Image 1 (tube, rainbow, N blue to C red):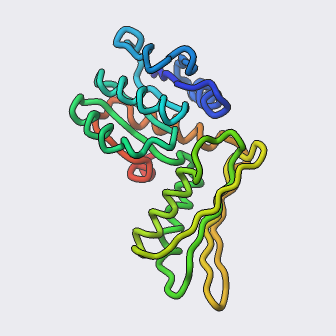
Image 2 (cartoon, one colour; image 1 turned 60 degrees about the horizontal axis):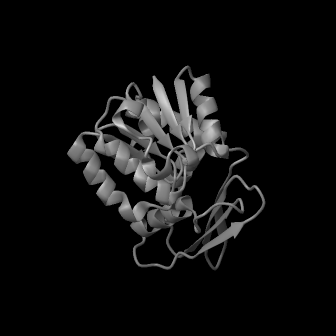
Length: 225
């Protein structure tokens, strides 16, 4: 199939590379090639099966809106735009487009989400989260850390779950979930050695989304990838 990758940064470039390795045709657009989603027109999207966005929060919202308004399909790996997620889901349904979004498409992180839900069932523990990313990451805390907190609160509503954010060098992404009691400490940790896991998950998400209409968060369809 033909995939249009929005964003030529480190992750976006790797998404394009992985998509080609998996036999897909690939086109790419940088932010400068697509100001305010101006390049996402019906003629330019003709023949494109799925768009994958790894840009920035403000650009992502404009890109999502433009793609969905045309009834097309988009996978969004960009975070920091979730205050608009309900509007975008409604647009996908209204226009018959497809939206797949997630704070982290890494298969390992998806498993971390599942394990965190189990950890949160422990009685007598306090929970906290640490996350570390590269210095150019725009949002803090990370979307993944926010998701981890939401998972814990889904099991234990009303408790305090502090998040500590660190921005260091070119860190690919480190997340630590800690459960502390008077007797011991349990930790779940995911360290990304490269961005390839994120890229592969996004491409597999695009393969899943092709031909579908609706809106899904990545955790909902993880088992189908």
